[in-house]
Image (tube, rainbow, N blue to C red; front, side, top):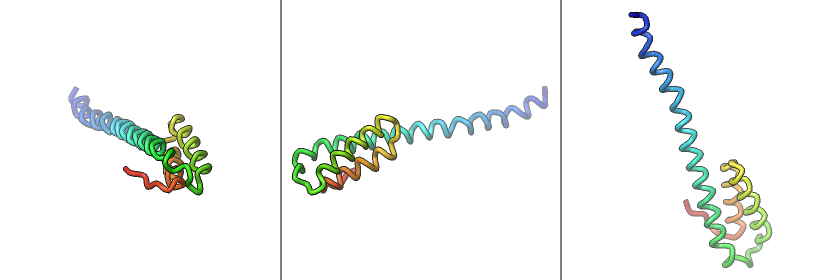
Length: 95
C-alpha cells in the first residue's frame, strides 16, 4: 500500500505529460487552419481587382493548389501556396 502511494504522484505526472502535446498539437492545427482560411478569404477578396496582374494565371493555380492542400489538412503547405498566390497578385498578406 505504501509503495502504491509513493508511485501515485509519478504516475499522475507521467499521465499529465502525455496529454500536453496532444492539446498543443490541436491548438497548433487550429491556428494553421485559421491561417489557411484567412489567406483564402484575402485572395478571394483581392482577385477581382487584380485580374491584370502579371502573374495572374500562376496566382490562380497557386490558389487552387493551396486551397486543396488546406482542405486535405496540409495547412503549412496550403498557407505557403496561398501566400505565393497573393504575392503573384501583388498583394501583401495580412496576419
